[in-house]
Image 1: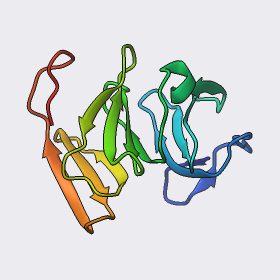
Image 2: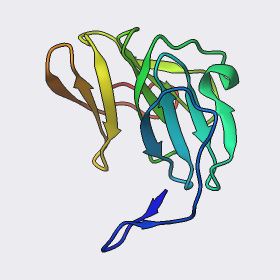
Image 3: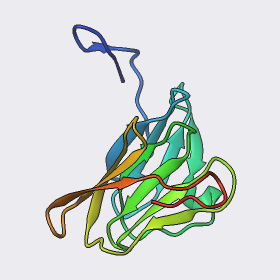
Length: 143
């Protein structure tokens, strides 16, 4: 773990152990981390690198092959699932919501922009797809 500044400095000698094939990592607004495992699950870690649990276990969700992960400004986690060809939102409370599935071939990366866009890297057709948030939260979120 590194701190931002003119040079990359180790924040503390810390490791996150017990992961099987960690692939994608994203910071959370509260200082924690979200980590996807190749062919596995998506893990949540607190600001002191303590494991908080997996989304699969916490939300009774089965992933195909989780890839890119990110957190939005409310702390919800968004996961690109390469095998299922979808992007799913995991709100802090409540059930997972499939945000996108149509038109995705091999979603590998996701990012939330400060302007309210969801950006998806689709390796299946070599496109970066940008979606604008169109609804009100949480009842009718539309991308």
